[in-house]
Amino acid sequence: MLKSMRAKLLDARSEQVDQRMMSSHRGRHGSDGLGLISDCSAALFYNALGRYTEAFAAAERACHYPKELGLTTLVLPELIEAAIRSGATERATEALEELAESARASGTDWALGVEARSRALLSTCEVAEGFYREAIDRLGCTALEIELARAHLLYGEWLRRENRRVDARRELRAAHEIFLAAGAGAFAERSSRELLATGEHARKRTVETRFELTAQEAQIARLAGDGRTNPEIGSELYISPRTVEWHLRKVYPKLGISSRRQLREVLPDRFRTVVFT
Image (tube, rainbow, N blue to C red; front, side, top):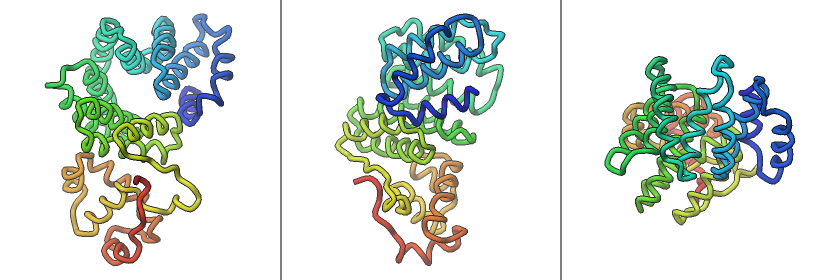
């Protein structure tokens, strides 16, 4: 149920769902699982839209449910992001300690990647970048593309604020493309706004553009066609080998081929315009 609700909210536009969101909250602040799911989803939704005060409030509500319900740790990354953006650094630090304990106990790339992404938000400039890169590397080894895209997004936002616009665009493009492919409309809009702030525009996909290669797909396809391996491509583009493979799986049907061996022969004739201008 949580997965379905999260997916619907990620693809939502604020004007379409605000009323439904408020309605879903009424009468659901007790100790029941439905209230927890509602608050977890609201925190995710408002973070996606960049409405951090509302995300913070929803995440705090979710954290007060009994831990026996088994979902409260899922909202800690939402709480940390929203708290930092709302100026509640002390609360974010407390939540990070709880998240870190859970991540160490789990030991999975997903848990440790989300912890690294959250820790980067609380870190100084000297060490934040290392945590963002760790998050991308770890989450790139999982099948959780949205979590990976969120790492690219936060890293890109941080780079832009560090006045590293070229580097920021690379991360924000990667995030935007994954969000679009996954149908995560709210996060796609946020990454699009960030790209605009760097001076780059993201075109919406249409029937006419859905078979075109995006900027990153074109770059990956060219490198793969030149014989580069996924790890080599990932190292050059600062993405994980798993993310390279994920992009290639989207490239093949767009170019009408079934394997990377065919890339070299089709790319000269089939290289398309890109989604970003």
